[in-house]
Length: 42
Image 1 (spheres, helix red, strand yellow):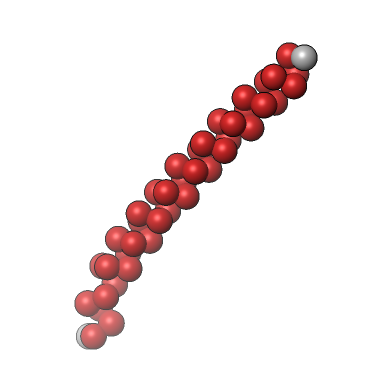
Image 2 (image 1 turned 90 degrees about the horizontal axis):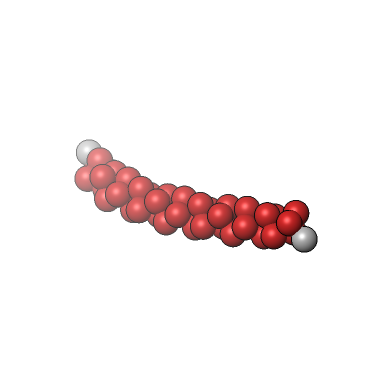
């Protein structure tokens, strides 16, 4: 019963952390695509 009180908190933290990670991954993917395009163009 005690552990159940902490589950929502941990879930919220995990969600925010996952969102941050996904945003960073998306940003890196965009950068990689841009560099690949420039390399292919030259």
